[in-house]
Image 1 (cartoon, one colour):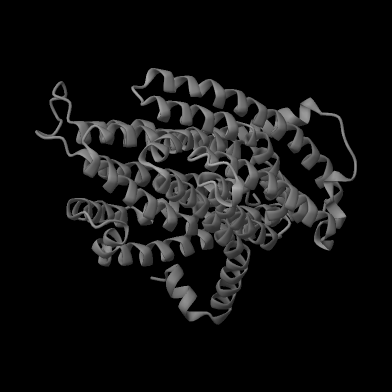
Image 2 (cartoon, helix red, strand yellow):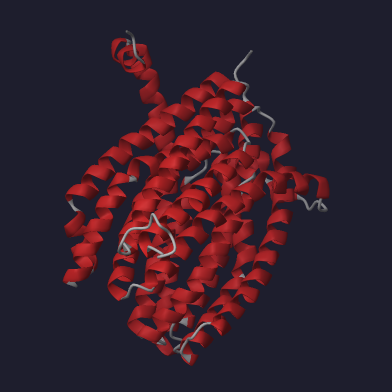
Length: 468
């Protein structure tokens, strides 16, 4: 019986087409990957600088960053509606439609960012209900106050980021991210430790460094776009339009489900961290190390997914749904190939990876066990993120939101609570709490549910767009 693989191996034209699609996807994805790793590096710098200042500074910054990350990722999802819209216009050669929609997206981003700013400052009141040292409490509150100002700037930057990506212009984003990382290191060094006569702010210096780098990102991208020929035919800032509430409503309708999806994921991981904290520092440290490392690995399928969103959008805009479906499944296949490699390496190198983070024998042993579980969910994690991005390329966002919320809130969290906490009132709970391992087993289940649901949804959406 003939199979797709058999067909691929027998026909040189099919292999050539696959190679061309893989190269095209990678050329678009690798600058995104470098940029994403640079942004992850900024978070690492903040934690490292605060940790070298004092344990109290690290605790205060960690609390503030938890609020920042949740709102920042949610806003990023809400404004991501610009990506498929611009990609469809570019694919259809409707370049005159791009500038006005980007201008309305910037109005939306400004509003969403201001709402995020208010929510951040309101969230700081949660610290009043926690048993914190006075210094840690005050630092966490001040961190949130300073970084909240960056949220409207970040929202506008991500609109221009999506606009640039949809034009196949990803290298400027990479360059700006790398320079931002350098600025973050310098500003952190000056303000956290009071170098070169600057005031010694401790962990609060990390907040000002975040504000400085976000401001730089927005200004640098606008400056680059004004001068690069690639943006000339679609330059959106040549005039000022009044807010078009009908168009903004349409952008929100497309973007809000993405934002809710990101919020569901980040809040689930935050809640897991809080539940694990009750089991002590060894469990918490191992969880954070394993999560940090897997987050770095996750940047590869995420970058492939963002690039795939653009390619699928271009093909659909050009009226080529068969090509879009082919691109979507090639993207999922490349993600699975990478996930197979990463799972193998994580499984083989779990203990050396743990040793690279810490010298504590108990933490190393538990981290290695969690990394083995992380190796298991590499395939499902890569599949779910790439499939969801491909579906968004079709301008479908509500159904992926439902799948993600079901996977994390109906499967992963309840199962994690059952295995990790082992409440006595549940007759089917284990005899002893499995702590961090129980939650990581639940992540395998939740991500598997998401992968199965999203691949099925991608198959349905792609077939529905084919010619009758």
